[in-house]
Image (cartoon, rainbow, N blue to C red; front, side):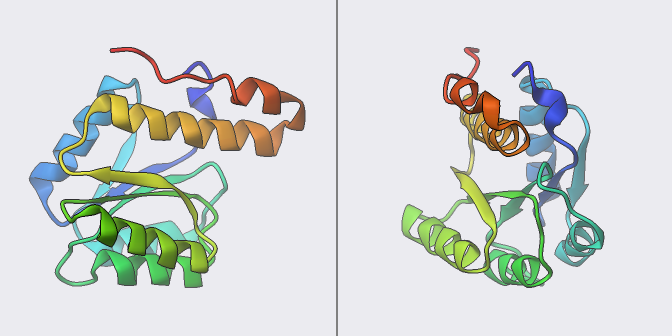
Length: 154
């Protein structure tokens, strides 16, 4: 995680304030303290589509009342979001896989999925995947290095 500063803006969107704090705690456990938290998916979406960069990261819950996660991903993709996406949910893996498929159809960079509740180790693995993609995109000579990135042990 020595390249953690390559991540630009980290955002979490979940209608449950308790779970947003859970997400924030998991990020802090892996050394990331600046997470934008949105319990209102409309505000989260607005924030994400104003500007986005390849090294942005968003976690999106699939089960939200106003805009469900699938609709959120569609809107994010239609807006041309350039960052990377992690899907989170308490749903079974079939639903998560369907959400990933829809996101890929919208050209969103899906890193993977987390099932509630998830561990810091699971989150760390996906953050490492994000960092590997960023390193590979920005520095082609680091591609071989990025394959060697391993999740930290806790």
